[in-house]
Image 1 (cartoon, rainbow, N blue to C red):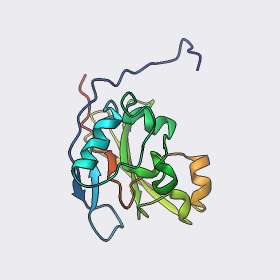
Image 2: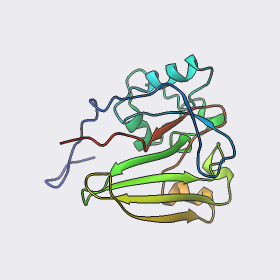
Image 3: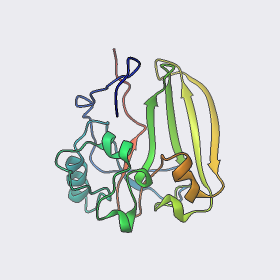
Image 4: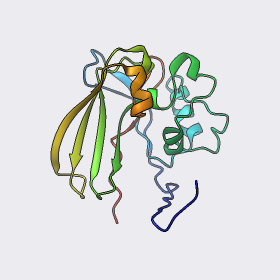
Length: 178
């Protein structure tokens, strides 16, 4: 993609905090789900190794796992050979947090996650939590849903975790300090 004078390039290689597999409650899911907290710069293979140590499979399996980062997998909706069974990067997100162009924070949480591919459900629901520039003060919350989840991927491609794969809990990222 060509850069213009209004472009910004963000290096995420220092955003490398990551947890081991943790069992967490997801909104609308009746049982705890294995997840991995990961910042955008974590190398994909590190997440896959953490999942394997806990007896799980990390569904996102690009051939570049040793060199690619979680943030890039999400941005490109990477999948790999395991995507046929468990979906792509976006299918395996429980939630994520990002900075908006207005320099505020937006946390997106998948509600009633089907723990599978988003296109397998009729309605995909999300809660959008808008925070101030500090990332700590909640300004407002709203709900978003797609009537046909299969079209949600085309219209608003961002999503969740799988039944046998730990999810990437990008939303619990610690806010970077300036």
